[in-house]
Length: 238
Image 1 (cartoon, rainbow, N blue to C red):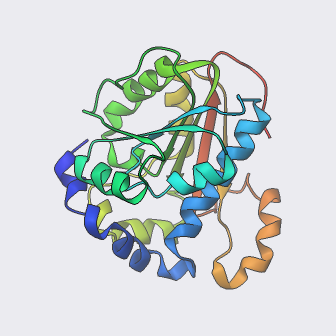
Image 2 (image 1 turned 180 degrees about the horizontal axis):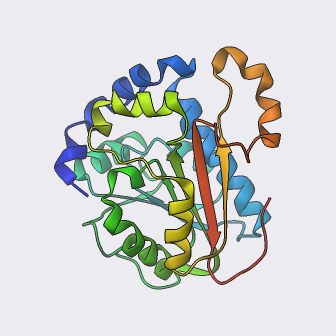
């Protein structure tokens, strides 16, 4: 995980992102928020504490911060990232709404069994594949028993998503991950009850059809997907 790679895009992240997703007919905030809405549903299904400790792994400039507080009110949020510049921007945008902690790429600087939920949004495709399992082992370590891990990623089976990634400046070194590979890595890291769901089938002009998406999460054509897993518990999914 290269700090300099992310530092150089920190100031203009939204502009790059907005331009890159214009084909979707949505603003970047739509994509930031839907992930937290889904994560909140999973948190409730797994009966996490009413004020859970949450780690946003690869939080960048803090785009998820307001949505965590909106959809999981009372949460204790920690934003972790390799880019100190991004963290500084996030803290300036959202003072006193999270802890902002630098990550050096290996050891998550928190004790065992500390968090109730660990989350990442389109981060792992920036991490060399050989590092995925060791990082997920760190997730497992810092999660409490019954805690939830949620990873959102771009779907490599969706041609529009693949095109968007290939033409995005801050995805120049990205390696898209098939969901079954991510599922395998999570199980190898010690997680159980791992599931995956495909998301975002209809662009902005067809948003009236989005109520149908809950019936399509099995279909590998969504623009993105998530993998969710638990530590040591074999039940509890929406």
